[in-house]
Amino acid sequence: MFDKLKCLPKRKLLQTTLLFTLAFFAGRLAAQVTEYNEASRAVAASAEGNWGLSFPGEGQMPVGNATADYLKQYNAYYVQDTQDKVIYLTFDAGYENGNTEKILDALKKHQVPATFFLVGNYLETSPDLVKRMVAEGHTVGNHTFHHPDMSKISTKESFEKELGSLEALYQQTTGQPMKKYYRPPQGKYSESNLEMARDMGYRTFFWSLAYVDWYEDKQPTKEEAFKKLLGRIHPGAIVLLHSTSKTNGEILDELLTKWEEMGYHFASLDELVNLP
Image 1 (tube, rainbow, N blue to C red):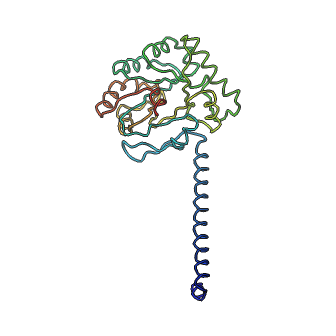
Image 2 (cartoon, helix red, strand yellow):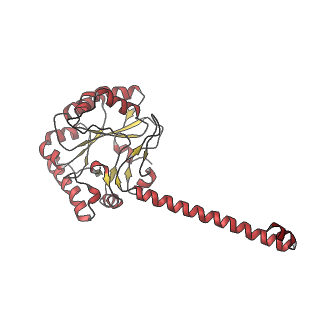
Image 3 (cartoon, rainbow, N blue to C red):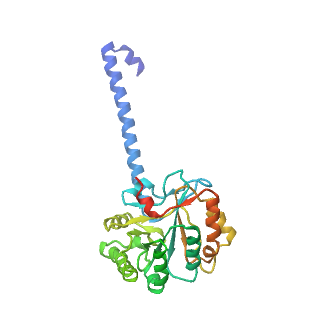
């Protein structure tokens, strides 16, 4: 091919070279557009099913199965991307089994604001504890009324009923409107769920740190808990703990102390959502 190019007149040679160059860059651009579109589809596809994380290293922000930027369009969060050693502490509560008082005592001692994501059963059986949460400055969020797999709920009416029923019970219990903060049960969700929650005025919260603390008959040891909760803590963490965990009730005072000794401080989800 290059021998033939040498035989062309100089002007023709320049035109031919220019055409080859344009074709080359057009091909590169098309490949980049295809790569971008495939990446976008991959991100969208990841925003379905179960929330999951991978941890690159101790003290580092984990990678979610949907990016923080992708979640922003749905007013959804799993982390704050920051170097500030701030922790947003949250608890999921499907029922009460005697551990919440210890947890509230530890939070009060350290003056730590937390968010408790509650279900209907908790509000029905433990209204006094809910009132204590509110009185001590904590936020109560929506964990749905019945704790179903929300990723299987496809209709707007059914989705709104799960969240709306809990809102009504909370207001009846406390005399206050419920903060529109939502956490999908078991982290199961779909893109349409995120859209429906956003359209209801909700902000959806996943997490960047949790550990297996929810099996009542198979509680982690103190050592196991500290290994995960100290080793994987990172700046901007949204931490998920279960208030049903006996281990959490027993270690929370010491855990908060250890995090403080590591230079961390605590903030409410209100501060996260109001960041510029």
